[in-house]
Picture (tube, rainbow, N blue to C red):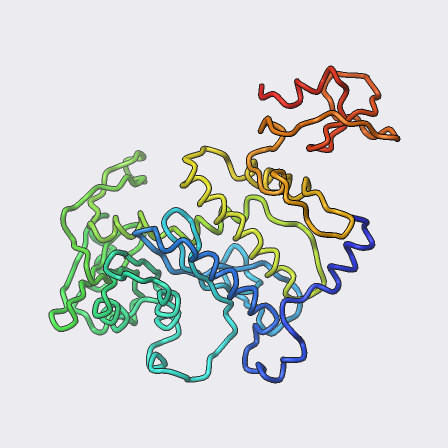
Length: 382
């Protein structure tokens, strides 16, 4: 594609009809809403298949001026847009949404706090609540949320802020921090059937759960400053489960951040578009590994996706031809089908290895310039 044509397409890229702005003036994410809806639908196309789910926030880096941009002190990315996301322990994102600020009261969930509403909205697509465990951090957790999720059928755990313990008779954090590391205190709410617990680690951690238990105790390895070596610290079962399964959103965030689309744009939603594109590729890679039992890494998968699109042949009428090169993964050069030698009128850059020839011949399917001697080597795996 010529550069000028690409820049013109990029400047005119929209995801919604601007003439409908007045009809949707309450939706501050109107410009990208159809894209979010379409991706969520396709992310859930294969159904929820992870038993352990996590709800958390993602920050999309953005330093421009816009009303939706957030500033969160102490985060690795302080400025940007905020996504709410539901991910499995594998890192697969099942559902996400753009945070658009304070919402207008519209339904029966509005008596919940913002964090609780986010969790309930993220869990809406889950069809079989009893088959899943849900984990979230102290931004979302409250006693009312844990009780409501238990009534719906979800098994849920989450860390708690001190002001959300609902006067639970647990030891004060200052007193607990003076005791040996690994000490814990717990209390069970008989009315709501929720277990509350405090555990002394590097800091005092409070957690609430509607299904997990204190015992059996496991052991965590921690560094001791006094003995200057790693020591074994008692760890309640609820804490162990939370640490093991809470990282789904962070894992997805890490995978997306490894190889990002680095094309800059002036539209405020351009970084959201590229982020969603990266999320779609990561999800496709996770599904591909599960289905094919392949060990292909993410970088190689992205290369193969790019090659599959670059190799698509377009007819004179502009319609994509129905060839195996448009959908083949891994690399089509090794599929052993329909690779024929053809001839060009003009010389093009030679792509053979360790060869000084200047041929006019090329592979008709791969569209790669090759001499007859290198043709077989190029299409054979090493």
